[in-house]
Image (cartoon, rainbow, N blue to C red; front, side, top):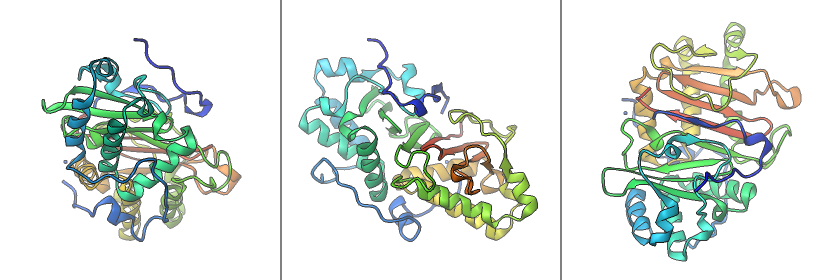
Length: 333
């Protein structure tokens, strides 16, 4: 079967890289982090609320067990398949969408999705998917490896979203490997009205506002790298922007709170693992934060493109003309 063609999205064509994929202070779950840090958001789910029956990985096993032989031919691939590590802001990993599944299978997909996100994150992603591609039903699913074998992964992709559940099959990698999120609302408009992730730009810019003139000169970079360039550089890497290690205590606290906001849409387990991986790479002091002059919507110097990067951590946020975020957090470089 030929690779599925990406959905048309002129702004979503850059990312197409295959990438290789725990100690920091444990933090509260994404849902708890959301309290007091994030704007409130409600979003309707197309599914009736499902009782959680365990962790999402157990749901992946149940999902696999419901697949027919014909469905498995489309959805199931070996662990070694290159599609497992491909990332792109707009592509279908298989030709099997959630709408193509049976009702009980759709409910399990929703259970998996709820399991790998926080309540606030789940609502945000539901709105994003509805706005960008008509809802979760239009997104495609894949299974790599054999659930229960110790090496397997469920992946869902579509416009502005790649999300995973892997049961720690990919050792040392948070989120099961590189992920993507985004939202097409507010395209090219100052403040990106209606965009469910614009608040992250506002939070990141609090860090820039807290810098003095000399620090701003280090942090502000003229041109951003391609959004899909999130391969990890390790300890010998060269990172753009200002080193968090040279910031004041108050400024570092702002960087830390920004990171918590970024991680808040995801489940506690993945949040903790991402922070553990960052610690393994040298912690906050080993990170750099860069803001990019290019594509400054409205010319207001609220920087719409920014990047938080260290030896084991890359979070590239492109907020112009709408949001694309590429994330890669792993001990393996």
